[in-house]
Amino acid sequence: MKTSKGYLLALVCCMSMVFLVAGCAKDEVDTTGTIYGIVNDADNGEPVSGVHVVLNPGGKTTNTGSDGRYEFLDMEPGQYTIQISKNGYKTNTKRISVVAGKEASGDMVLERGESRIKLSANSLTFAKGESSRTFDVMNVGTSGSVSWNITFRESWISVSPSSGTTGQGKSSAVVVNIDRTKITEDVTVNLIVEADGESMPLEINVQFGESEGGGDGPSGGEGSCGEITSCDSEVKIEFLSCIKNADAVEFQFMLTNNREDWKVWFNRDNSDAVDDKGNSCPGYNIKFYVGNSDSFVTGGNAVTFMKGVRTKCRVIIPGMKAEASFLQRLDWVISSSQPWNPQVKKITFTEVKW
Image 1: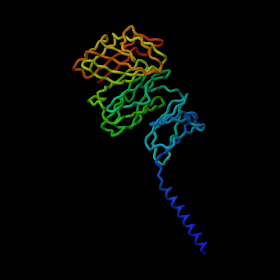
Image 2: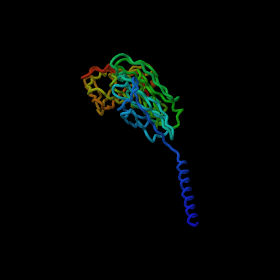
Image 3: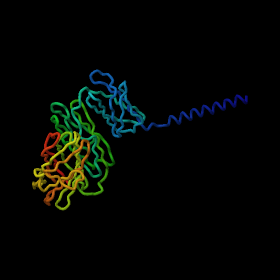
Image 4: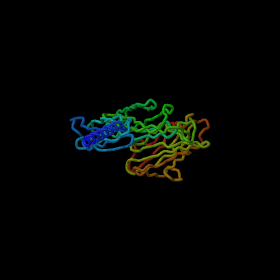
């Protein structure tokens, strides 16, 4: 009987431990979610293997298997954008929400054909105090114009223009503005550019707070550029800063040539500017500097931009009138170039503010 009672007691203890462990396991809460998806051909419904999948924010990537499937595990809850691409297909994008403890469906389709649009940037970062940035929608198709439009969910973002039509080999500048009074922390979201059956995301990263330099300008005294029109869809121009010292204005930008190495002659004399009060700034007074050179570019100087290399450029405009608030327009004119000619023989900056 003692043995029987001891056995029963041991059995009860074991059962209690089992229920205790089960109860503890039951109390555990999943803090992450999962994204599962399959990519199918839009025409025949068959799974597509070898599709490149990019998840933002975060920049995680993977490829679909032979069954067209992909997955992202242990994802923090939140809003994400999935971009899928493969040669012979148009790029496609989808917004998706991840919930803790649940699986989010990332099923998508790819439409056959070649991409006709390309964005000049994959992301735009707004530094503290900065409220305006620019990117280009480029038509890289082999024929005809392409119509596009931009969608987003956030009320504190505005874009201009939000839709348009871009000719073959041309690019259209888009200005992205943010209302800082409506955000309270660093934030990352995505715009989606849709055109001709495809869609591409543009990641927007905003750093919360005022710039260290203060100032009441759109970027805390560091300046901004309302719009940049590049000379070519394969030449990316990124505005950096603008300051005014006494009567001289200096603004800087980054130029990236995405074609083959490019030798360029600029026409300084014809590169005139005008301020917001209508005062002209003759080109022969304007100084252009390329790279780390201490010598400004003249009509006889050739400048070489290597393929894929980001080159810093700066412009100094002396003699600005005291009543001027910003530079309304500046055309940086190109005389000639080798071994290829740009689509337009000038780079235009408008509404350059300091």
